[in-house]
Length: 306
Image 1: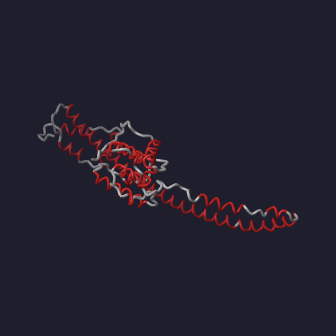
Image 2: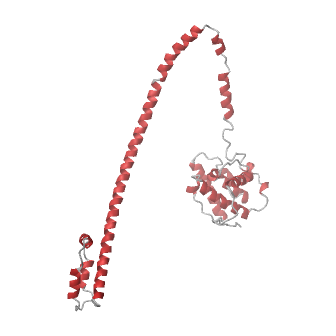
Image 3: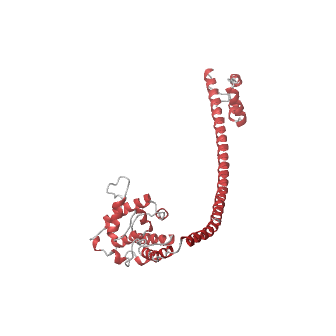
């Protein structure tokens, strides 16, 4: 039966990145150098095969994927096997395939804990290389291509023609150099001109794209600024309305009245935004609320109350 485990930020039995990579290499006899290489999912497939025999068909696993579909295939094989085994661990494949250190390190920390909780027997008895059909994991880079490259360089350096060319008189050599110089000059000058031309054309296209992006951002900034001004205007309007209602309440308290004129209150509540702005400006310039005060005084005996 599968033992499901959980890991949190307070978990203490965690590995460093070097310890984690060394742990995987020791179990699978692999050649991983960094945690990000676990993003292919191939190692997790074989580690699951180690824990639960015959749980995964390793012939379906791409141990050295060459494209994104190969990586997705590995994660599909893994998650399908985990579902059949009853492993309750959601896998965010979109994050894992990007090979970011943080995401892969957290997943590897969890798998380390899960592996130790479910390991039965000795993992050293597992033939990791044979199980993956003697394929390197990951493939050793440059193991087959380096030597032919060195062998190809040596024959070009082997012919010794220069000492024989030194034997003739100095005049022919000077003439040869003089004849070579113009051809080299004539041959090299047009090439930089064409390369420079292509280099100049590329920045012009990039500059055009940058200009379009700048104009787009300016337009967005203008829209946001307009929206902010409208929101600020609305806020000031409702705040001034609240102040005027509060003024009516204070007026009633000063006059020791328990009623507020409904018409005066409606005049405040149903005032438009533009009228409110004008009244706020008038208040800021020193205008008082004498009209509201008179209206309240005249309707103290009114039966309508708020």
